[in-house]
Length: 502
Ligand SMILES: [Cu+2]
Image (cartoon, rainbow, N blue to C red):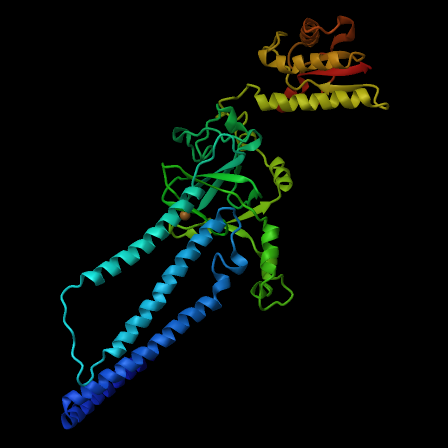
């Protein structure tokens, strides 16, 4: 129905326009064509002048009105070090192009008024004018050269790579439909190697090489996590993609780079304002001092809810919008604290699984962690007045299957225990072997005794006095778990170290 009425109105308007046309045609015949044309031209010229004024005033007023919503002004000044250079480059360009924009529009409309059809005015015809050609070629060329040179200087300043002596944090962003995988280097500050041939969608979606020690402590943030970065720290972002073109865009830091499958790109930037500081910056502006939810006056203010964000600035598919991530800039201390709570992807998802190439092998970081743990336990016992004795399970002491011969991997833990015993010289210990309940009782008893004495012999060979170490075997007499499950039996097969005097 509405469409019908609309069509009807359009038809009526068309008829009115035709009728007016016919009337003015008749009037023109009566008054003479030329005079009517002159009058029309005059009217058009005046209206063009009016349009110019409204247009220019509108442009300037809207730019003024919305200036606080534009990047680079008032509340939205840059949050990164190089961002101020980018903003000033844009401002200089806007200043010059703005002047040209206003002048050319005034001239355009003014001339159409000045040279409107008038009695006695005759058009001048000239085919070519060198002076004019020269002016409108040279002047824009000089201005453009200045702007481009200025832009190049800024580009070179913001786009260098890091140099080896720089202190920086490198993270990696891998875009895919429709999320980002963000990888952090972990404690060693180095991102591990990747190889596309290792990609397995179920277990290793980034193709990390787990034989590279640098990869083992790498942290991969899951899709919904905030990206946390420290303030006043140079950040290098490695950018890549797995399927189509994406774009890593951090508007508040003035960085934006395509994420191209198979072609890693990067940029560096240094955030200079924490999220909290940026919120304070916004707080000074009335448009940020309104409730987030206008219908609920008790809701938080807009500035309180502000967050930096990462957007995909490439129209990469229907779920494109969901690639938005919150970026939180925090102090260096807060960052260290946050980082220490993150778990390595390898430790949580790969370690000792069937697809772990390091299965059954102790890794550098595990040895180090265990040393810290053992050191803590010895120290607590040695320095405490109330604890007289204590038992520590030797977690990383292994034997050949069914025998007492020590496995190569055991030396890390035993060497460190020898070191601790040479530090705390008054401590005496007992080494106790335990087995599970499968098999012959007497054989188990013998095996446990042999294993304990094998450990003792090793420690003695490392310089610990033989009198300080007692070795005993308990066979299957002292289980710590059920012998009915494989898990329980594994816990029961163990070697314990007890500090018996100190
Ligand atoms: Cu995308």
